[in-house]
Length: 458
Image (cartoon, rainbow, N blue to C red; front, side, top):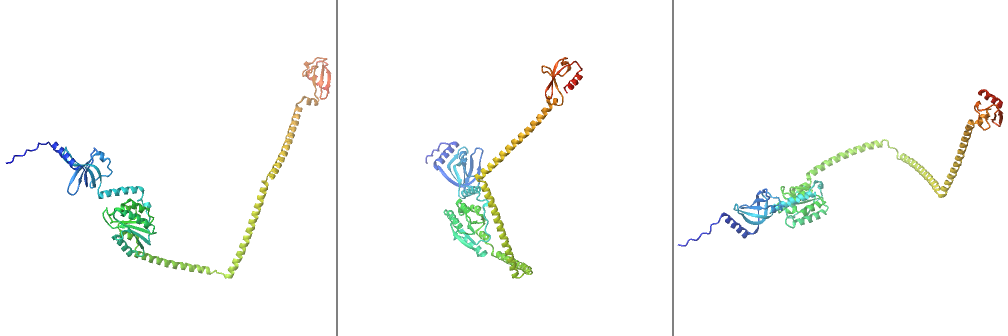
């Protein structure tokens, strides 16, 4: 009977989980895992927790706060992502988990993210605005087609044009429409087609996955479409497929066949329009012919003989010649008068003439000054005579000429009252011419004395 084997020492749960964590971290190290994101959780701590799963399994993931702050990819459930990190075990709960250090979209999810990022940036630049869209020609003559020469899209386009508008000339500019080199080939084809003087361009291909159609989402292709002077119709994939080229192009068609129908006017409608225009033209010509016949009848009724009209024209010609000669003569006379006036002005502007004018002005001013002085002297002499007469009128001598006299004593004092003299006093009477010696005979009343003195003086 074999000896029983000894059991290992008993471990605690914490020891078991710790050893399991060390084992996971030592064996796997740093690794990359791809799957679908689900169960997204963002607690207040700033950490991000989610589950990464595929069709048959799942693993819990943790993205700590300092890594989440550097994350540029918006996370949502259902996003296909690729993460980089290390395996570990949360000892408290015994949960097996992946500690994420980097995260990015994976597969079609990455393409969708790149699509949205480019769409936002080109929208901000204004490449999608309706104001820069050019109208499509109503009746194109030459249309360029940029697509694969072996794909179904070119056959569909040619079939539609052959049915609806066989008169339109089609020019195929072949290009790759799938793969890494497709974007560069499309840029070259757009530049080449834009130099051909075409009326419009169709850029398209048949349906496919997002990866298959990705060359129509490249920024270089979008900018090449925007740089085209020729109107561009984008017809990429099926009706549900949307590309960056659709937004930049002047018009989006749901399919290549729809693009051909948009640019090819229906031949039957054109024939109907042509028939209508032809009918309108016939009616218009008939109406114009009727108006012309009526005008001819109105004109021909007062029509005169050609010789009479020629004579009238000759008379009008002679009148016009006469008016022309008269107008020419008047113009010459006005020019001669103007010339004479200019010559006079020119002579007046010479220094000698100006000096002569200045001398004349000086002589006139001197004469005016002399006249003004003479006038002022005469006026002042007249004023002086008037003042003399006024002065003579108030002078005592003028009073003497009227028969009055002035009595003065020996000291020359004027006698005005009788009490100023004594009987026997000698006085002098001043007359208008000369003077008299008088002697007072006696005392009399003042008024009688004055009258007696005046009589005596007389």
